[in-house]
Image (cartoon, rainbow, N blue to C red):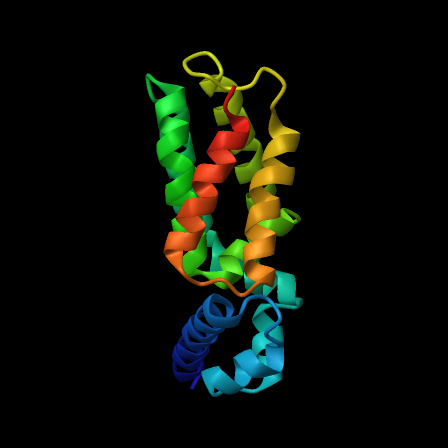
Length: 179
């Protein structure tokens, strides 16, 4: 009986994470835990047993994406030409966020630890780019939060889903950072 329960618990866990991932990507973080439970075909208590708060569930869903974004950001930081890396990174980041409403919302809010660390790494990339390209001398980590995260927030608020529009704003962000 215990083995059966564990297998059921694992299946339920996988269904909850998959349902949350799909709903967050489609609609952002306004999705409720009861909606996730319904999509997963489980009760609310099943969700709350593994994820005592909605933030715990959001973090579980976003972890894999944040690991990939962090690796991409660290690779850009390690590039020989940090300015070129920044110019490649920002459009790539915004295109990625355009496809995933939940991840975009977690990113712009920056209150969950992986999002805050990612924003800080992007600030470091911007500062490194100053040494190899025409980056304004007065931009830094705060500007990443205001300009980059502000664009992401507005595109979400406007319910903009066209990746071409997001790429256009990536160009405008880079222009704002350029000297």
